[in-house]
Image (cartoon, rainbow, N blue to C red; front, top):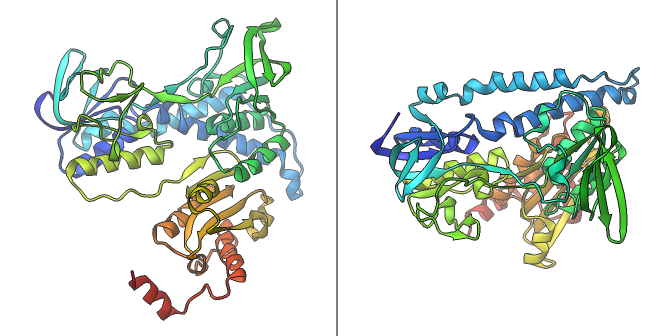
Length: 472
């Protein structure tokens, strides 16, 4: 174990952000120590994103069996064994574990330390009574679930998104509290695996996402059988007969009662700085959160906070923020990339750049929207997956500012729009994309053609396009 002076970067937390930072730092020639209090790989690998995706894959397969009649195939209700699904998830995590193991990291010249870190001063931490001093620190401790204080909750069993994978028998009726990205995705997975699912949300589902895109997903989930209560608060929770769980809910003046077998809280997460001693590290706080500058730098210029702990949602966003912080520490010139937001429902939502609401606030009416339904592609027709659309935000100069995609391959399509935004491309230039046939990517040239119909002069000749790129 590394101790004392000579350490360039000490990273606290070996989740996706911490490991990405460590790998980037050793590639830059830094001496790195990586400290982890729990399982290497973090929540995302062991209890979060990875097992959730495995559960969703099983649910998707069950849904395909159930809907095989759409293709003219005979079908029976799929036989679902939660114990086997759970075993497959654990096996998948075990199979991927070597890529995040201490042995793998040590082979890359990353020194690892197991234990809980606590700052002893601005440039030193203690781990299990041992002192580690470094030139810089990077905090990548992630987040932990937030469970609201509800009367009666301490008397009933409940799950969080990190513990729901412990269920080895199919819930007869799962009650999910919280209709954010995690709550909706887990609700849909259990719904497709044969459970009755009721979802309760105090506000709007997927608040902060484009309502037009969200509506497509919610209509699909309701069609699959989801019972959704919005603008609904929970008055109390209690145990019922036969170990049932009873929720008393209220929407405006209307009161109701939900009786279920299992209860899942997906009501958000908060940064996990517990026990770190940030006050001893001279990290300035705004309430319970640290003040962060560019690339996650704190008031103590030795210390950076990245990943979920800094508010970056999604594994891809966490890794990107960590790599940017390492570049800032090493003095490398680094440009912040456009980070897509993904909601892993079916159909999925992916968006990047400016939303319609942001465009309206910033540009008033100096922008326009191009919409194309996924059903217009031959791939959607062939695969009986017509639910979705592309929505592109375009400024008055004809440049792509943002895009949202709803559909089965939305996460794969959205990087094309991220590149278009970064390169200040126009829909006409996007129209030059030759999409494989058949594929959902066909929707991109279809959107460009839709824009060209209303802007016949939008496709400049080759020399004009080149001149336009060269001029400021």
